[in-house]
Length: 191
Image (cartoon, rainbow, N blue to C red; front, side):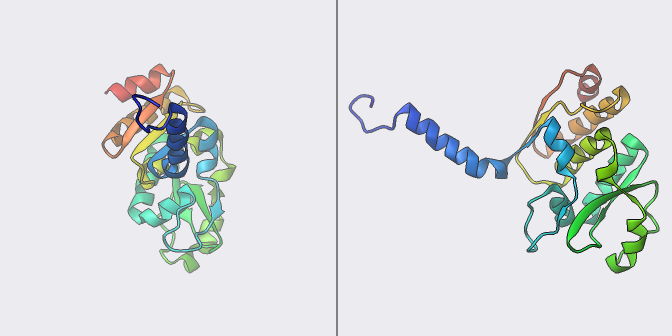
């Protein structure tokens, strides 16, 4: 105690702060580590209720068609491929990869066969999976702060440059804190 008052000790303050960050931190901060990004857009169960967002794919579904199209646009710029959210299974959400999704019917019942013929993002390389994880998170997930660790990991230098540009463009939507050692990424982020 300090000055005869009844103030909590530094230890009690730290414990309370840690409890706050454990319970409320995930709702305010998204921490996109290198390992975690490979799992972010992995197929996931569909939501049990309409407002649930326990995965990035559920956040993308809830964000709507425009967010999905924006993610696909950026993936095409980076990798020459498009992605589409496949929710035709009702129990699982997938991201599918292909060269053109323009002929996919809007109604999921009619789209099931066409989408199931496309490859799953889960079966692609680490570079595209990691990049799509970052892109989808920054576009569809609502957080005040994003901590992104080495976003250039798994990417070739030109892709790292484009990723730097993409992340820099997203800076107005949330606070972005990025750790990187890549000169290619840094050069694009300064433009």
